[in-house]
Image 1 (cartoon, rainbow, N blue to C red):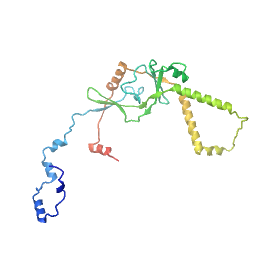
Image 2: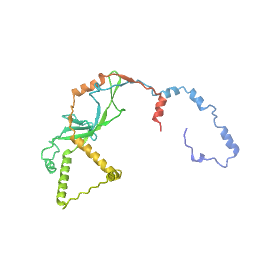
Image 3: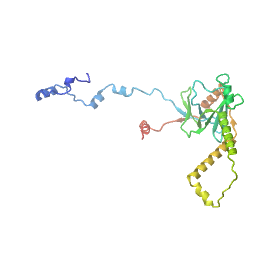
Image 4: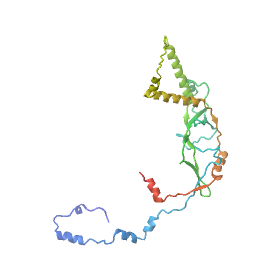
Length: 281
């Protein structure tokens, strides 16, 4: 039956008499059964409600690294690096633990796309053979896991301690810019040496405290804190790390998911409670 009507049937003809209009109504079929009655009598409703049955269930096992006192698990990402070109050869990782700063030294192929004259323009006297990737380890505070489905059908979840996004760092260019700024500063000081130096000292201790409560005082405190953090970072030593690949990496990965203390996770929430949490405003 079509859902559309012809244009001439879209409205009632005003020339028709009331009696003929009532006769047309009486010819319409009468539906006495309600929607609830028809739904209950339909034999296919149960099959339609269960058209996507549960085929199998996967046990969730919460685990941890084999030696939590000396081991930790981190997620390292490389934004802008395609998955088809992973970093895997001769990597030299190191870390500044107090600053949670991670560095990867990666060999640079100078046989292709390397302009020696350009590096000389930058002031780099030697050939650059490697470049670095830097990133900060951010604590996950729970809720992020590394998972693997084992051969026995169990999904093993191991909490991640932190994540880091490593991006290229061009330290030789930064050092060159710092050297240029220092040279410009020295040239400016040589040209504008004052004839005499005056030292202004105040004996009012309250003026210093009052300055600390102003916007300028807060800015100076923030600048001082930033400089102290930079000084601490520069003085901290790099700790080299071991990078495993190939069979060693496969062995370590296998240990993570085999020699574990299994704690099966079981949900205490009903499906309706779970849906309510998802739709909560």
